[in-house]
Image (cartoon, rainbow, N blue to C red; front, side):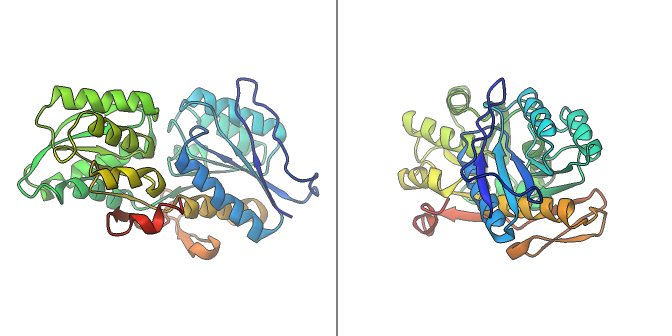
Length: 331
């Protein structure tokens, strides 16, 4: 029997609360470690992990993470999981390099380590699951803004943290294709630390500092919602378009109000499902995460690893007024 075990993070790393009785010793315990608890994107990913566990039948998922988006908080979580001797750790990293020593210790103890969503440096994991191609995401986030600025305009970036692996890569990829969008001018990049209140303040500050701002691009599900609310509160709906990466359930109001014309995201349920399947294949079935390997991901097909032992799950999908009602109740 599978279970979904949610671990509430604290300074002392509270003990997991089991929903069902104790498991047989041969069950595979996979820890899904997120950037921080209480973020809708990761709650949806946890549903996917639960789905994979139910499908596999002999998996216990431990859903855990720190209370804020720091490397220090994740290191505490990792150390606690090493002490519990879990079978696998699948982590969305708050820092590319800072987690490596702790994750190396985990691998030295025989624990499978993969990263997903936001990556860890290669020496700190066996493979990385990108939600999509970094190049496709980078192009998509600027295209979403440019599609509604045929004559060009000023845009600003509202990211998560300065060390957030995935956002930094996506913005780099975005800069590579800026020549394809003549007239689009990036005036500033700010960081909301994936905190709603700080992201709101940063978005408000952007509109005050750049009165002619046309769009805010937020490649983070927390930042995009906060920025949309800031646009509404500033009375700039129709003047500043908020776009980027977000969840349909959280962005439906922004689409309805007009604060956002469109946004994109992969399905986080699929992402959590895929990460769990990959961790299972490596820890239970002895699959090697080598360049060129094709690793099964259940209903999501297979992951093909590149020379860095990284692979992409799927293309991002665009949500707007034409389809938001269909998806807002799903995730």
